[in-house]
Amino acid sequence: MKHRGIKKEWILDTVQNHSVRQNISDVEEHYFKQIEEAENRCLKVVFNPTNLKIVTIYFDRNMRKKGCK
Image: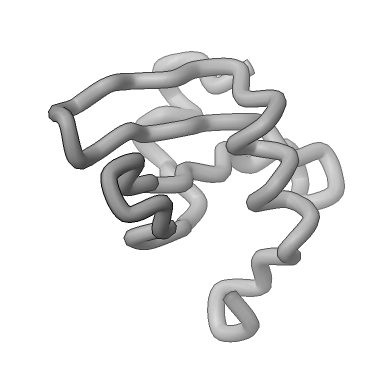
């Protein structure tokens, strides 16, 4: 998180109040949200609902182009 400049509250907000959600499989869900404080970049949170753990988080350039709102 520190290395990528991502705040904990952004992650929680993205999972709880996402603008886009994708169910990839039984063990993988993707959550997206535009973060105004981060120059409107699109935050992607990859979550495993089976063990309730976050797999990875990063700003997704491709999703921003596709419409992360």
